[in-house]
Amino acid sequence: MKNLLAIALISASLVACDNAETNETTDTTTTTTTTTYTPSDGDASYRNGTLMVYRGNTWVEADDDVRMDNNVVVYRNGEVKRNDEVVELRDGEVVNRSGQFFDNTGRAIEDAWDATKRGVKKAGEAVENAAQKVGDKVDGNDNN
Image 1 (cartoon, rainbow, N blue to C red):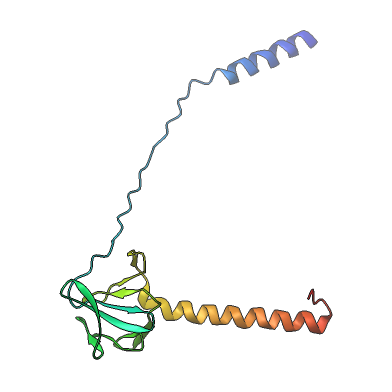
Image 2 (image 1 turned 180 degrees about the horizontal axis):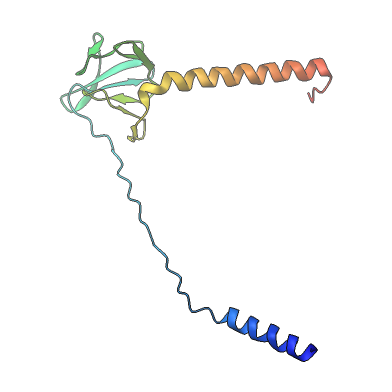
C-alpha cells in the first residue's frame, strides 16, 4: 500500500512538472513627446524680477503689460492672467503667444494653469508642518 501511494505521488509530481502550456508575453513600448521651447517674437519671460519680451531675436525689457493670444495677459509683476485664473511666473519661466508655459530649462509646463492649486497645497502643507511643531512643543516631544 505504501508503495502504491509513493508511486501515485511520484507520477502526479512528474505529470505536474510536464506542463505543456506555453507562456506568452507582450512587450509594450511607450513613447513620450516633449515640447521644448524655442523663442519667438512676442513671448514673455520673467527674469530677475523683470518682465522681458522676445523681440528681434533678443530679450528686451517690457515697457508695459504684455497681451497674448487667448485673452492671456502677462503683468510686469510676473503674474499671468487668463479669464479669472492667475499664475505667478517663477524666475526664468516663459509664456509664449498662445499662453503655454515653459520652465527655465525649456520644458513645457503642462499644468501651469493649475499652479494656484499647487500653491495652495504647499501653503496647506506648511501650516500642517507648523501645527505639528507646535504640537510637539506642547507635548514635550520637541527634538530641538
